[in-house]
Length: 159
Image (cartoon, rainbow, N blue to C red; front, side, top):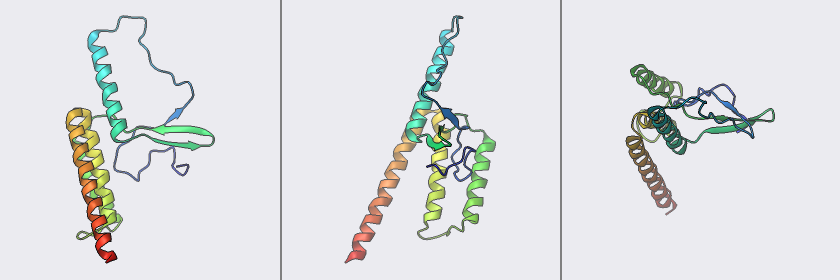
């Protein structure tokens, strides 16, 4: 993955945070000397849990550049209505730019719709982790079904 750039990749519809330099001794933010309220602790726990779920669903990108290890995780910023509209416009624009076929089997179209669905899963997971995990199951079932159809097609062509 050394070919990836430090600048967030415009090649995916999934929204990522800015890349961070990974060091051997990562500084973990700890509570300051003042008393941290129970509510802020619960909020931090929920945010940490959401980040863990997102990193499981959509693993962070990691690459080495100039001897330094970089990591770029998916964004944990909730989506606005404008983000959803922009996602739709980006999908339509990329379908047209990459000349995806409107009908029939098209790997380009499938790749772009997969990216779009991953971004929707990211957006939903931030607001409701359980819903996001359910969409993850739907995504995985859809992938397995497509793979089964591909295997069936390949075996039928072999005869």
